Image (cartoon, rainbow over all chains, first blue to last red; front, top):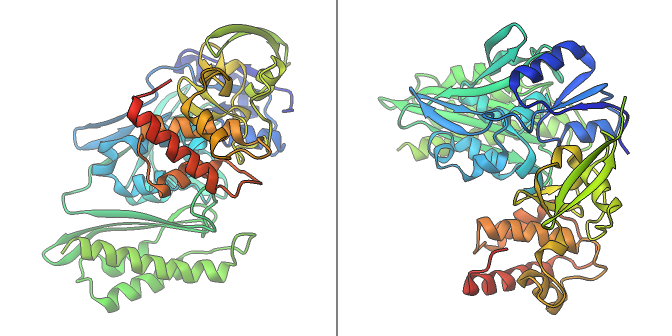
Length: 287
Length: 162
């Protein structure tokens, strides 16, 4: 049995924002329910009001327009998996969708929900960071767009105000010849929480690395970009020594903790192994 | 706060009404209406025993609020077939010994149906990954995978969909 709360199921975004603004911090927006209802049940969350966004039209779908890919916030993980556009323009995001929880959760869980849950292990976030994604927030005073790399302010803390909803996620279509991938290290192949997640994006320009993006999940209070490691490779030839150096520096940039899934030491070592492996694969794919 | 409301749920093609408070899950509402083929397991989306189809997609009914499901098409295991005319998955689970205690079976069949609708010829790996959200503590899974593949073959031949 869940705790006591009121439930609003608005028909429009304006109505949802209005209800959230009036209810303040104790109101919680509900999308797929795969995090929120679990948290309510375990009493990690005790909302006065839940605002179910399921009847608001126009919040789902994937579009490519003007050189940008835009996701509706309620696009499900299963919809990402079924999308040719995602396979073509954001293969790393497809990799993450494929290893995301189990089938029933993928059918319900949404892209915005995965971002908003704030988990350091949120599987869609490293690929979206590596794509330079932006998040549009809409509240009572209008809309604003923030870079996903600035969105989180700490462990389960973000820039979203209580009356704001994530209303779009978008990124520029990567330039031709950019290779992207995501690898999830977990204790089982399916339905497991990530021990280390690594997303890499890498292009080539005259034999050198260009547009290098390395993003890490489950190894810091929130998913992060490994910017120093990116800098080691950017504009340089991808020699074995340089890739090894970038991987070593990526491991230094993270701050993993010990928990039930792995020790921090193991996670740090795996960041080094996986960054080297994914960068190597991207370099091989670009030859 | 939390007042009850009368809602109408469309379950296996029939409308049924129930008085539900805001926090009532679809799982609780379905079982309360006598649909005990929907099983209650972990109630946190880990075991898949409570799987139902909502507008054709398999979801955990423990992670869906009953009021949110109003106006949606809900299908439970019993909506897939009858003892006289079972669904190919129900037939093959029975024939190939894929059900032992039977507790996970409704969820397994719903999840398998959802997979086969999207992917009529899954590889063994695809099948394992699709069913990773459904836990079984007695069969060891092998007979379940065999039963789903056997049903998939039958469905491909007959072009069967629900």
